[in-house]
Length: 141
Image (cartoon, rainbow, N blue to C red; front, side, top):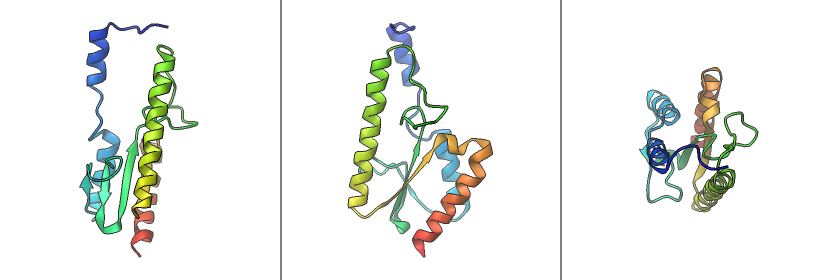
């Protein structure tokens, strides 16, 4: 099936999608800062340019959008009905890049934490952030 938008409209729509400083990412960052964790953002020197880097803990955090990173068995990940093959290739490419970055980071001695967007919706948010804090405390001890 062809795209439902013309090229200019599709280009505009795609340009409005944020890759950094998304709402889920900002939520995690506010939580970390409020709990005394200090971090760097989007370190270009590290594989995959992690969203959050905690050098003291030698840990990186990726805050993944369920759609863009193909969160398996998630209601927020549905391949669009238009340009299905293009979207499948795009999301599979994102998944491959994610795995490549995680392997490279672990090889360099970094601990990697992935947080999915669906884990930060209001009913799961507190549990997810508390688990993050527990994981970080266990890493540092």
